[in-house]
Length: 204
Image 1: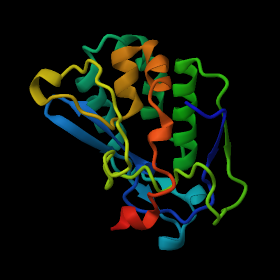
Image 2: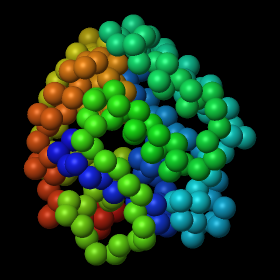
Image 3: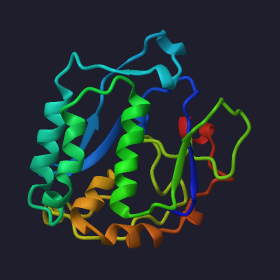
């Protein structure tokens, strides 16, 4: 939200167990990971641009039912669900293409038209500034990143399990609706300790 141009990595060797094919939502039982199964056509050397989504598993129906169950009583689910549901009804071959379209949908809902996204034209080994390819990772906490994120907002199942952070943006959208933009703008990107956190920190 603090940058007008975003580069989406499209040339790296696909890393396992990252947010590239998963997110977390807030279900009636607490934190629920949603993981998209993928096929690495060239084994462990497959570039992310060639990562295919595996439709041999019935993940689309499972994911959408989980989302409906988690958010059908949230204030803005009925307003936004028809923009997300098609991603669980049609088959998009490559994972980056699905991710790109979902992010574009989120930008549309945020009315953040100033944000422009592009795929990278090649893999750049040198660190960019800021560098987020390795920082946002399921195995590293917000606290490890030096983040004070995220300010509390009302979540449907908070009375049962408390406030959960680091969820998919759909949790914000379905709960806050148009206020999502203002919420995200108030989250200080400067809290990302981009100079001190490295991929080595994450792996350790």
